[in-house]
Image (cartoon, rainbow, N blue to C red; front, side, top):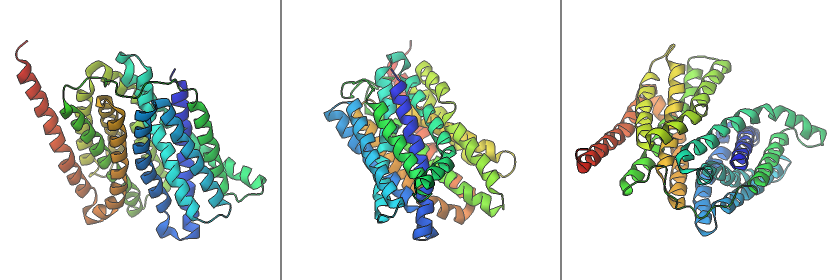
Length: 375
């Protein structure tokens, strides 16, 4: 039954969105705006570290227990952020966000639990359902932030503690939901389309990592772009919403496509989409915002297509950890690259990353067809 997996993932996403947004405000007020991004960096690094740990727990125990442990670590982290918001040493906020990142890793890796629970012909669709559920949490969490501030004030706590309390409640609910996830064996199950050797797996990992690098690099520069063009927050909000829809809304379609045609076709489409979106983003005007939707969906194709090709808990966790590690790198370097030459420079970097993978994917297919001979 997928309901506990999907519910836990959505709740964890709501918690992460709420805590991430308010932690930046708390640090800006306490240590200055220049350091406001540090809590989210801690969360990203915690996600990378948590992915590795959850992979090891999955191999030693089983997938369901590993996810529960990840969510439990997230509960401890959320509690730390609450304490920091009500007057404890601010270092607790960084530690709390790091541990909360481990809960986020559990949410991300839970898509493989959904695949384990689904029939072989529907594994990709099961994974896509969990990714799609992320939209619900990411979209719903922010709407509860203001009411949570009022609730905290009513309890005699600082108003800024409200969203952290919301995050704590959401992670705890995710932990409870995870207790209903059916136990599966340690994951060394075959992927959606079984690979005959390690090359397809390495290609899948490369596609997922490059998809993340390109997407994060471009989207990190978008707020800077809108500010330089004197666009208001309303315009920026529309751009981010359109991009988020591209990332998640069409996930069920992606899952159906993978189950029907295999991961390779979907990954190729994702790489092509990345290239087209990066080039279109260099143009201002009417095509800019649609290019962000395409960028989001190209990431979705790379992420789910690559996920469907991986076949063991160790690989899944290592790739997930790598994805979040490069996210931190892309977030740090994107503004610098943007100042050098705007979106054309970012597009050039995207081409340099994606084109070699696209060529490798096409050449590998040609070799497979040549070896298989005429039919």
